Image (cartoon, rainbow, N blue to C red; front, top):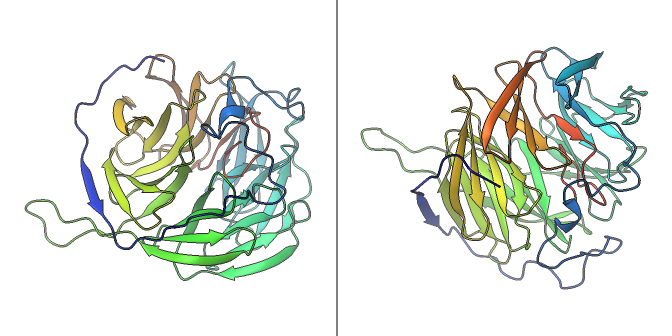
Length: 379
């Protein structure tokens, strides 16, 4: 792919609060589909490589408008709004189920998950789930994992009925985003309001380590330091490295999967928020919500190779990549729009007006064998 602007400098801040080695057992998580390529866990996510389960679904963009309490559905080929559906209070994210058959709208304030049929785009009967800020699925499909932010809990549930299986109280504030190791045995969780990360054993459903990201020293002429505010979490294609977006530190923390607790900061832009792996598995797209831009990081050497800017600034938040890999769709959280970027030519394409405070939009269907949740993390 082509990139419009090359970034020549990268700022690094290395810190090692503590080291925890021996990250995972060599035996994969029981029931997890086997990794197809040990060098690329996203090898099933190539352009238009759709599962038979989703092959006939019409391509749509589903936008939860948090303050409007609505779901906007957009045809990405025409950029036209197809319908707007009334939701329960406070929709946050649209999440593909592990089996790819259902989209779940997280009605956080309303305490419901609303199922959407991806074939028709219509809503089904809401399921009562308390405080569903975010939703994930274990790599073996055994559990749905609800990030109950206000309750300070991670709740393991049946992935279909959403019946509670286990409640894990968390020692942090703002439990938020997650991603899994290559073998599925552990997952890393961000806690945005306390600057912490949790290392959790998937099978045991147990927190093994609690980590505190280091405070960022004040800039010249300013007093005090800033407490990190970790957001999205994503693992590299080879499974060796976790990336953690940090809004307060204005970049992404890099943590080796076999050195849990050792961090390096790469500055990307103001209020770094969302992380997305491109379909060729070569680069990571990073939304910088505080400056209206998207940074492009190359996995091979962690170099920032481009920055795509929104004309007149903006607030890019959460989104996803089109099935063919040519477009990046992301919500404009505080501008009441959706942004579309041209990945091939590395540039902003257009914006589309939606409801108030759009948040975790999902473009669907996408390639992949199964979903780990959020707005679409597929393997």
